[in-house]
Image (cartoon, rainbow, N blue to C red; front, side):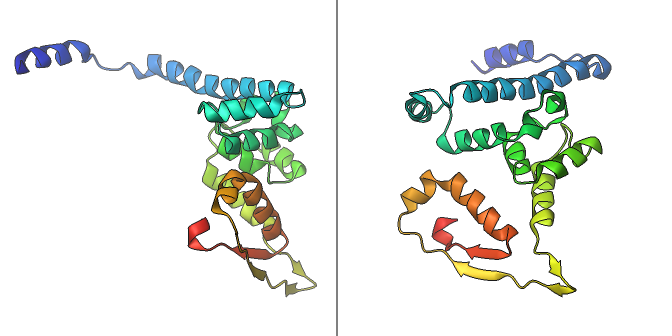
Length: 190
């Protein structure tokens, strides 16, 4: 039995060397089709989001593990951003909805500048987008004085409500942080 499995495996493994020049376009095409597929999804949501029954559709997508509510919320934030949805910018964007959602937290004017400078590209990493967001939302100095951050503790009554509304809550926390308010969540809610 062991000899048979070795024969089958050896027949399945292609041992010819990879022609890198010939293979790179295959990977590039697959990678670029990822961003195209993401925009097909965004356009589907955009087309249907204001129609009667959209909430029912969202429930069904979530229940069938096709598209979770948190991801739907992120995608709708991307749709609401005209810079990210501009057809001319699509090929310049990273094929990651997390990265695109993080970019929605940055002012449109700044996004346009970063696109013009080619700082936003398909190679943009989530960590870099988050760093820009932190940098741009840091408390500003006023008349030579640093604004002291305000700290608040958020008491959450229901962890299930926190999970259902996680994306909205994260967005609110980010907005509070941009005003210099730091909200500390207990470990059980992180």
